[in-house]
Length: 246
Picture 1 (cartoon, helix red, strand yellow):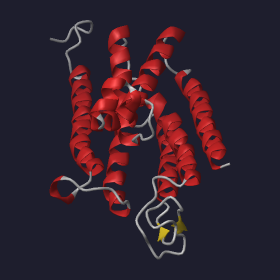
Picture 2 (cartoon, one colour):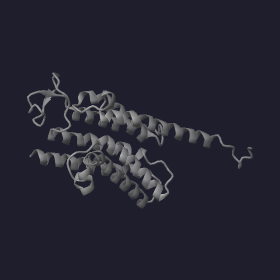
Picture 3 (tube, helix red, strand yellow):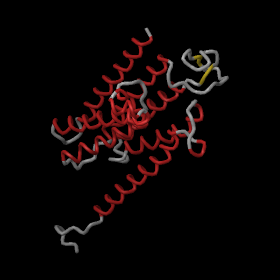
Picture 4 (cartoon, one colour):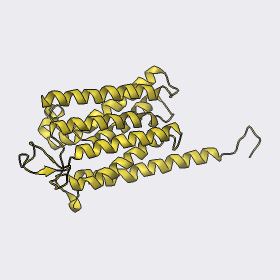
């Protein structure tokens, strides 16, 4: 029953995300095949990114291909893979317009729904806690004897809140072309601090792999936003030959 509920929730997340993506991409001045190419690039990039850290950790499984079909995936790498998958598709199709804004709400809603599948399955749980809303997860090392942070629900609330906030920003045409990057920065920041609630192994400086990834990715996307804004400013201040300016 748990497996069936997990599959049903994940299927709902995918279908809802696909429908929302179609609605949001209607605003893009692109041919249908260009939109399809961008969506395919994002999907493939997200799928590869989500599995890649686990595949690299299992070299034999990576070579044989078994690691790609085993359990285990990460949303952070999935989002990064999806972003760069879209950029690669745009480069191949020679698409120059910004498309990231159309992905934010569909992606955030999909993850917000999908995290409930993790909650039902009892995976991705948090550290032990004594809070009133703590949940006992049978799959935890203690066999469900301790109450734990329902980090799946925390993350669902975060992404669904982001969906609402970024929908308002999108409708208001605020930060055009930068919404997905801002969303990634927001999520990386969220994950950096909520990692303290998760039973993840630590690596360098006592930080988890997700925290180290956040430290690397946040400045990168902040730089990309700064670069885009600089290019826009330079374009807006160029002399207009048509108007006779020099």
